[in-house]
Image (cartoon, rainbow, N blue to C red):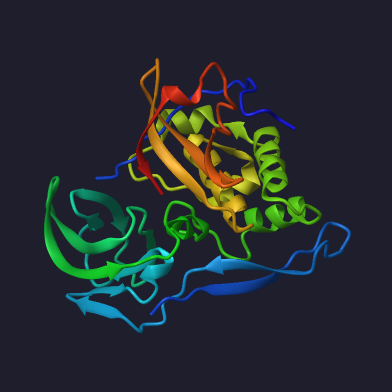
Length: 287
């Protein structure tokens, strides 16, 4: 088992612009290379958009049906300019790119309980945006950690995603969350290679494609963290994708916070602890 402070060679790069209760538990069967199913069916939480609480106007639809499970769904269609979605609670906000393709994006409600505002904005030229539509709704989650067991825009997966199937394969005979975390952490560290070429050319707005990451077994820190998060969330283990700064280099980086044994633990699958301790990390955003 890897320790969380083991040395691993890597280069860091992350360029990203952040400017009714219910859930879907879908069954999936995993088949290994020999044609066996190691543990039969298992449940993965997948967001739903049932349309029971919907706000819409000017080509924008906001499905707030399951906000008490920690997510909101937003879609836009019929716009030719760049679109952004903004999720706000009080003085805090998260900004996301939103395609105008009529397909829902899922955004986490990671700022806790309260009255949220979701705004959708259209580019008006340069860096200027004008509001298209907005809605407010109350969020009252009984467990705010639940936010981090669902897929969302930066950690997107479905039942058929290879990362989910690998997660189940690794954890098929494991009973404790700690054992599952250790197994998945070791697999990511042992099988992923840092992609220096991608790090040198990655552009603003980059979002991990977990299917591509699983095929290539390469990525930047954002990819490592999204993959680790998806594999753990598929086991029902709350996992945050965190973006912030690492000292003394003052580099932008992505790492993880995992809820295990009743507390949040810092983990970094990219650096694998190389020359750094938890106090070197400063969180700016979490997803």
